[in-house]
Each structure stands twice: as structure tokens, then as C-alpha cells.
Image: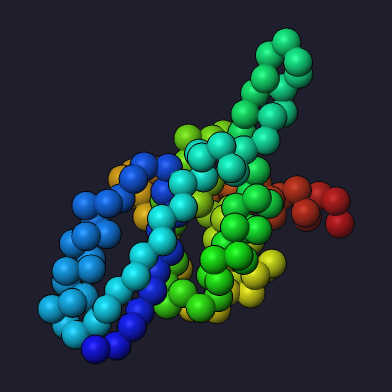
Amino acid sequence: MSDKSCIIIDDEPQDEIVDNLKADASHRGIHLSCVQLNPQDQDYEKDVGDDARPDFVIDIDKIIEKLKTIGCRRADVIACDFYLQDDNVNGFDIIHKLRTQLHYKKEIILYSANLETVIREILLERSLEDQTSSQSA
């Protein structure tokens, strides 16, 4: 039996999916270990508000630090939800950091229940970035 590992980054528990993945892998002779990371956990937030009105958002640097400590570069695959209930951080941002800061070279799956909307948002964001960079050149 071979050993494989995955990391799932999602703001909702994915226990049932993880159980199904493990069962399917076991039937194929694979022992699968999965780590779930919820970016909405208090461990990964920062307060951008003030004393009178706190405003907690995802601190992507804390997520990256956690991924380092759990040895994400050894994971065979990382799956990340696009929508993380935060206006400032999404799954694409985390994937970008995985590739650029942690130099993760293996498979990454970006998923969403609203795939068409996600594709449009990513393309629009990239288009706006291209326009901004060409204007400043």
C-alpha cells in the first residue's frame, strides 16, 4: 500500500468528502492522509478595525506559516476553495503564495460551487492588473 497526502483549504468542514476520498484511495491500495485547514479559524485572522469596532479578516501570512509548519511541500496535492468568506483573500491568493513563497510545485486544485463566477473574477482581476501595469510603464 502506498502513502499519499493532501491538504484541503476551505472555510467549511469537508469531513464527508475526506472520508470518501480515503475510502476510494484505500480501495486502490493507497493510504491517504488529509489535513484540513480552515482560513476562518481564529488562528489565521487579524484585526484591521479599531478598539471600538474590531474587524477580523484572514491573515494570509499566518496561513502560509501554518502550511510551512505542516510540511505542505511534501503533500501530494493541495485543494483550495476559491470563496473563503473574506473580501480581501480568496483561494487564488493562497495558491499564488504557495507557488511564489513556498515554491510548491505539485498539483493544486482550485474549486468552487460557482466555477463560472470564479473564472470571470480571476480573468477580470488579471485584466485590471495588466491595465494598471501598462499605464504605469
